[in-house]
Length: 456
Ligand SMILES: *Cc1c(COP(=O)(O)O)cnc(C)c1O
Image (tube, rainbow, N blue to C red; front, side):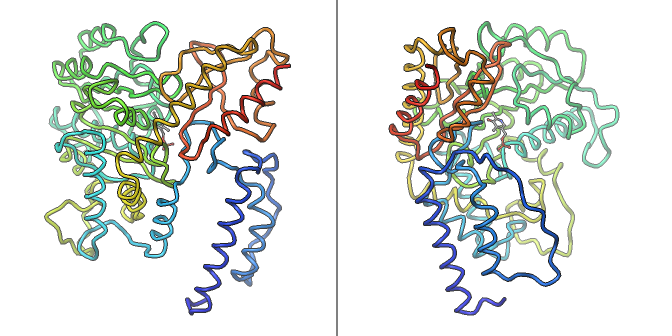
């Protein structure tokens, strides 16, 4: 099917129909789909064409998708897609650029400008450079790979060229995200091959004395410290000033996973919970969470891009290189890269610092309102004061569904909201995370009513 003007018109009509229907239903559709089966269907020899396909999709697939793009999906930390970013993401597909090398378009420059703006938004110094990744997991993987290259350089080994056999390294972390552990495995360190630093009593934050002990007892020549800002359950922040000082003294690489926690800077400035992040060697951020751009969009930043480029450099003489600037294909995992900077660029321009800060503040206010309702309820137990956007709770003695798993199932089966399980201080709990730009007070009241009725 060619892009004749009739085709273009039909595609836009179908998009408009889908878009309107989705947004009309979003508020009342079940937040998660209870039917996740897909009818068996064999690969057609003769394709059905786009009209038929659209009907098939609407019949078989769309009704079984979740309302994760709406205001009451409180699982994990899941942002939605704000209107500007949605439009920009359509543009990404219309233009379908490959942002791998500069020289054929302005797309690489736009990615650089967007990284600059994110640095400004988060009060980070110019010494950080970076790129967009598919998500925070890919950014954490780049963190592990760049640290590995750095450790190699300290020991006279170019890991990218010679491999990592014989690399002498110790890794310290306290409450690393699951994706960080996966990244340590993918980077060849091993998922289990890290020292578990103690946490401060009643939190997931790293105990500095324990880290100091690990570092000074360690006789490995290379050291990597992985810090969190914030952790995904407790939203606890490591003391990055103290940690960066220890890293400096021990010649350790410091990677900070700040996927969603960095957004706290918008409310409280750079000298509050994330103070000291500017001394990190590398940082992970996520835009498809709290910036509310569509998947897939993470960010990796580093103050030592030479080690990143040594890791990711591709020698591809058949591709013309233009630049004084480093080509993105030599800074990241993929060669061919989506123009994923565009929805972020558009969001930053369209909402500005103020608009984005207002989204964040609103999510935090709603989370705290839920926490205080739970705290005052005779049916629920709030497990930790809510300091950011995540609320941890469980049913109490008076609740008819005292068992956490049963209570969570009942909450999710209602179709009114989606929450996820977690473990807090060794105990199974329920987690509600607020990160969608569209969540309103009405959403909160609807969930409070549900929680109240389930308890009785
Ligand atoms: C979500 C998250 C990740 C993983 O991010 P993806 O975008 O899902 O790959 C890593 N670290 C933290 C702290 C997170 O919250």
